[in-house]
Image (cartoon, rainbow, N blue to C red; front, side, top):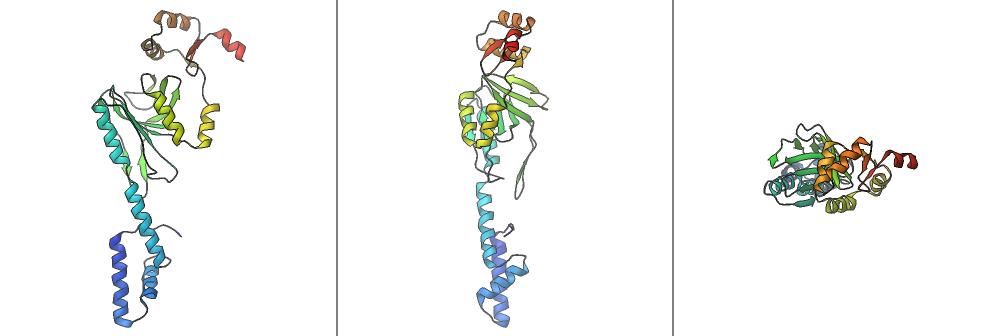
Length: 244
């Protein structure tokens, strides 16, 4: 049976219509309920009841917007937090939200690797999240990936852009994402991961923050080396040749 959004007020109106018909012409109440249900586009009265129950369940599960606001407030207060939502718009989909102590907050779609920046460096960001009657529409900023010790993003956000971000609680975040992702997605993450990246100024800054020697990294750049996040090491051209 198809779903029709149904409110308690609509159900009461149909009941009253059935009672009016019964007062004017008689008939069994159950038959009249089925009659008014069909006139309103339902298959029968039980269909009305099922649609009412489903509508209430969807309404009750809509926790995304409150969770978004809560994670934003956590980031603005400098409190680290990770939250997993319920299946808001899609029965098979959960979202992950997290805030960091240094004032960042993100909304993630674990299945599609989509990312939305909610707070950046302590400043609340403009986002588009539409809570429609039967679905939630999100204007994502871009994609994300957990690459070794980095939270890697590729976004059209003017302040964030594409970069590797260090210092996030990636161990906990990685465990959370693994828990909510489907088996197919977990396999994709294992075999579809990029193993090496260019040693950009952003990568150097992040690695220096992890106590790497800047001089060593600059020398690696001059030698044409790349960084492997999964192994947390620098790979030189000779290593690439051996692996090929």
